[in-house]
Image 1 (cartoon, rainbow, N blue to C red):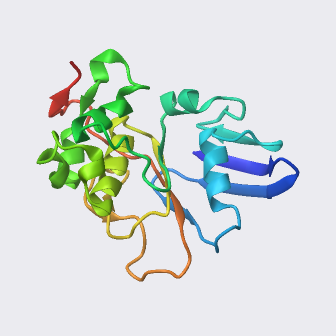
Image 2: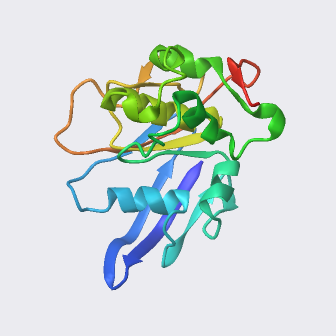
Image 3: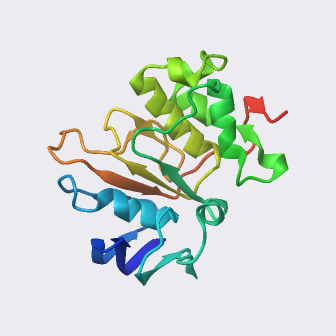
Length: 205
């Protein structure tokens, strides 16, 4: 379980988060809704370690990760799909997916078949540059990259209800959000994501 307890975050003298607490429980999708500027992205970035918090604690699977850097949290199983996708436009789709190998041990460095089951268009475009994909395809690539690292929990900013996810039992597809769209912009966490470690379509060279 990912547990955020009474955290505060500042950008210089400006306070972005004040005493925020939230839990992402195993087997559930947790969403934060709110208008622009209320701190959703700041909360997400604090949870994955991109910004240090001024007070409070963040724990994951019972361990305090408040002081850990982003790559250390990734190694513990926290995936992240950033706002704006943030793929590498000059790298191919395959190379972008392989950037998710970072926190994995060498024998686990392969792209699971489940990623291509969710997003078959990626498999047909492995040699195409990321920057040549459509916006929706780039979003699928960003989600696929996060899933490559076999996260226990995945955090997504502005998750799209049209993009499926793998649920905690490995069922697919499953929508992150309800069928009815919201006027607000959501940030979501999906816990206990199951990716088959034995299946792979592309291995590290």
